[in-house]
Image 1 (tube, rainbow, N blue to C red):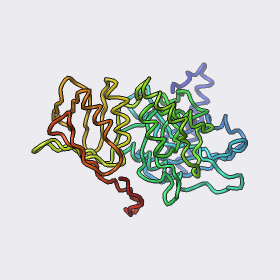
Image 2 (image 1 turned 30 degrees about the vertical axis):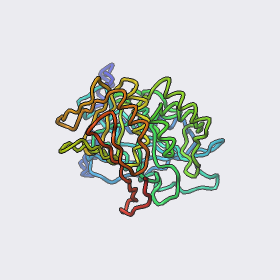
Image 3 (image 1 turned 180 degrees about the horizontal axis):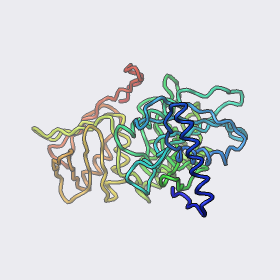
Image 4 (image 1 turned 30 degrees about the horizontal axis):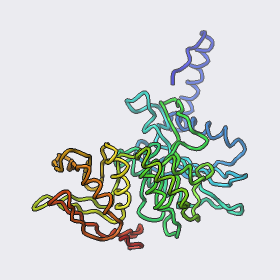
Length: 370
């Protein structure tokens, strides 16, 4: 942020006198001046405009300055027609003075928000939500993979630890009320809202379009309702099927719990049952639409159509090419259950779908898929 030029010597002298006073105070207390919280104040100002009279509850993380970790999370108690807790992170953007070399973007350019439904009588902020947002941020810090609008994440279990919620995945959108790209003192910043969804809703979102599917779910303000059941009715499923046929999928990637390609004697593709349904839908909505699908697991596998079936090994994984007939056969045969599929249109290529084991944070198996 540029500093204002002093208009005359009186203002300049006043500024110098102030600095001398501050220096004298620092000599007495022995404290060094901290960095100016330019980015932090900017976030506070934005939320202050929405919640003028609401109390800001803040949960701080103790960490050395400069460590890649959230500095804290603020929560607002939103009352009215759709009462909920509104969470916002502090630390994915640059909270203090500019440090990164990118003048256009503040840090990763985002902060995460979460709107979590609450009962009118509820007074305690759910701790699991604070931990969940910290975990999402730690993933970004660790991998450098930054979430964006339309992205999704299969959490491989309930989003609320030790709960019976049916919400086991999340999608990301611009926050329902903070949906612009803001110009903070340290560069651009947008607030990315995390919304909890069920497995079948996730599969529909992957197969077609996360934003369009979530619109069909009609969640006010994209609030996360921890106790709700799936909203995937026959009517919504029909609209999703129509969307896949018309638009294809807006998603060009898929994260899988297991996706391995063996090439020693014959081609064997090992797939976890948890991701089988999503892969089937994306072959229909991406590969058969002539686009490239990228699978991420232990390594990267790209899948696309070609005039012949072939596989190329790359530095980071494999490039797989299927004819239209092979892609259609795979889409028609893959199911989320343990099985072996021997392809008729690609001799020497077998698909083995194995059971997926979902574990809690202590490593205990809580669900088996397939």
